[in-house]
Image (tube, rainbow, N blue to C red; front, side, top):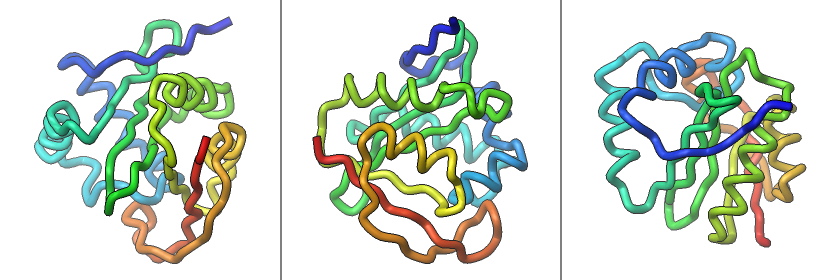
Length: 158
């Protein structure tokens, strides 16, 4: 059985994370992505901010010691949100569910919010399995699809 773990970000992680976040199918599914996923300078600046902002908790997800994605929490408009990204070749293998479980056990702040494209059944399943409850939906512009789409907003209270 594979070992899924979380660890802090190190400099050597940048290339693998950058590669993952450029995958066209992943960008489409995530929908709410950076303006230009191929802009390495902007990506590196973003990683630098993740490492220094005290309101952000950022962890690398590993699968048998190999980088499998990332998971983080950050504050937006006074609310703490959870976000994660899993390398597409690992979708459907329980990596996201286990990573969310590990992250929530270590990060006890509640309430915690999460968002997912309403047609991203996999992410919605992971979040609901972890105890997040749907609060509402809204239509927002999704850069990863270059259109307005419905987004589901969820909340975890305990």
